[in-house]
Image (cartoon, rainbow, N blue to C red):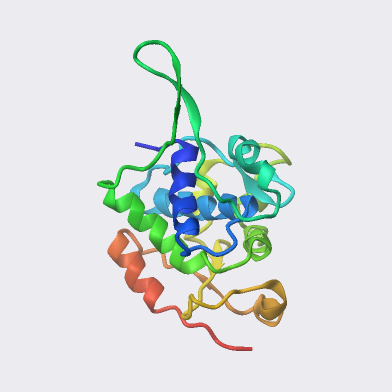
Length: 210
């Protein structure tokens, strides 16, 4: 089953609060969820979140999440997202949506995305979602919903690429990567069909210095 956007967002926010994801701004959160959604569609053939991304100027965005965290601007998100839900007695109740701890596969998807993209800046993550042939670039028009089929395809074709780094502890900013942006992207193999395949492939990615 797909989870609510806020539940998935809180999984990343928890990792941000614990120090696993530096500078987790609203823009960065949107992009990390975008990559997690893409991986989940590829490996499990089902979405991780129950909403669609829209084509916005700075990349794919889930509008409901944008409004929930926009107060942070470009700052780090410091608290989990709550939502109002009807309780059994018919009253509104404030809850904090989460992905259950026993859903190991979804947490492994999120941890793998954090390992690859977590130390990249929000601006750089936005930049790579704009690559020619990406799901964002293939969407019809600004503000339109991006078909999940595009998210799945964008990581298994030559057009769908992402920056892979051996040393995930380095903070990748645009200036540092400017000289590598044209030749240090790698196509995701089409034979990745499980978490184990993905983990093995990610460990083999090599980052060449400028």
